[in-house]
Image 1 (cartoon, helix red, strand yellow):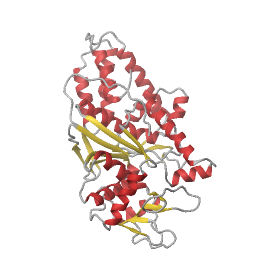
Image 2 (cartoon, rainbow, N blue to C red):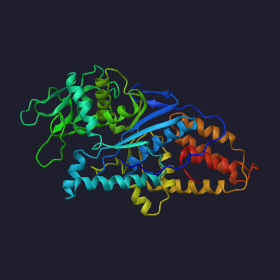
Image 3 (cartoon, one colour):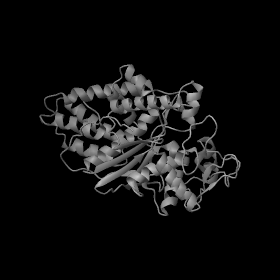
Image 4 (cartoon, rainbow, N blue to C red):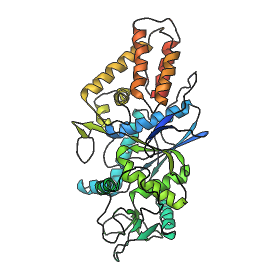
Length: 412
């Protein structure tokens, strides 16, 4: 699948800081410690609606991970999927009398445009679930062969399910108790009451073809893949087991990331799927999580059409810490626009205060679990001093401009 265009990332003088990130599995902020090549998988969209600000906040957070790693001299192997076959997509297409393929292609194209406008560095590999079906089938067949999966007791529709406890480690990623797992499994795409399953928490791997539904011929019979196995196969086949960061929104902690890890670990008879499980908080509007089901979305494309500078959107979302649930408001955007104007005014000056300490503080804060509020405050302090005409360093404005571009992805 085609990705979007990249941008050049300036190289900065001085000493980079190794990245530390919060890991959901351990509940600790730990060093990422990648090798020469840092490996990251971030779960992509199900393309049945345009990119909303909840999506944007997630992909901007992992864009910072990419940028800090690059600042540390790592090559970054970044993989992202697109769930271009799944129930929500089919349901939206049916509701709107649309072709599900056309709908998915249209919304994926808009997503690419939004990511490019926001200056999100693109993944090296951008993989649709449909194009990955052969490799997904291969993984499911292995799970069936080793007893980690089974056919539902249903003569008409013998769907394939995963024995959720096949690895003996189920639950280590989310650390949720059984009651919470059951609640989220039912709310987030699971089918706990499906007759023929051995356990309510066993997750669908392969849905046998039904009349009127898209399906693909395979050694499993005609059908289509479940949600979680898609990411297991795509990630491990490109990054290997034990890659550095598995990322997504906090609503993916369970079931999606728990099952993606369990599927991959069962096939490999090894663990962990990823060394860090990193999750971004939800963006709310009017006191509720921004989501398609609630219809309370603010779209990146709508803001762009209204003339909002994408750099201001980045700044507005960086005003809160990536792991926090936070609200989008008109005042948040207005403050970001004012901040952007001040920063641009300051870097356009012929001289300013020495910026070496400012760049060092910017690196310190971003390397400490992407602390963007403190990072923005560090730039604000230099800007305030520069606008008072406090400094005479002619190289300082250019250095700040390059640092903000390289590490925050914002062009001043």
